[in-house]
Length: 274
Image (cartoon, rainbow, N blue to C red; front, side):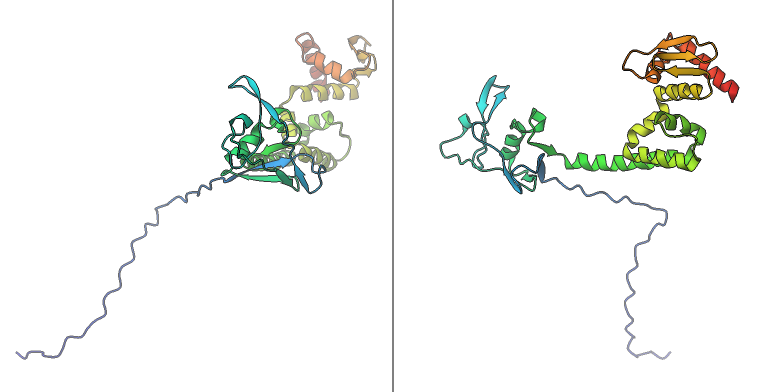
């Protein structure tokens, strides 16, 4: 047998295999937590002081619950305490300036945060100079407000006109116009205060008042400045005190135990018409 003395061919090394991917597997992308590095104070009246406004810091006193005494506070960047009686002789009082109505305070300035939190000008302390803007809460409020608008608009789009009429009547919208015209006016109210608008659909006052208004339109009830009466007999149901609205008085009456029987009679007559 002949020996093959030819040198062996050098083959390429096989490429490393890619790790198998399981098509059915899944992974979750984790949200990176961003640490808030500052708190923002917003000055309420931007007209004061023009572009720049400095908080008064002279003779600012607050009540300290821990010592049960009134103490002077002042902001010194080189002092840990905001209380003047705890600060050293080398404490340097610094100006606190709002620019264009805004002051950004870093978390590395805890003494400034403490000072602004305790300052009598803070709206949380009954003052009227500035307030702390909670950025996280603001974001939540904006998102929830946007969701509420979409929900309110969706209700107007999806609900039947029969379901929308009680709310329209409560809002004094002309219900004799075309359906789309009614919905257009409802949209204006919904966008103005979506949360309140949504609650109207489950509000017994809204349903009761709209039924009373409809009963007047169908001549079941008769409304006058001095009270609400049955249209057919003229019998007085409830009298209206001077300066009050008859519909409001009648609505409140029907929501009481005494007025529930009257309201049942009203709704019964309305159903017989339908």
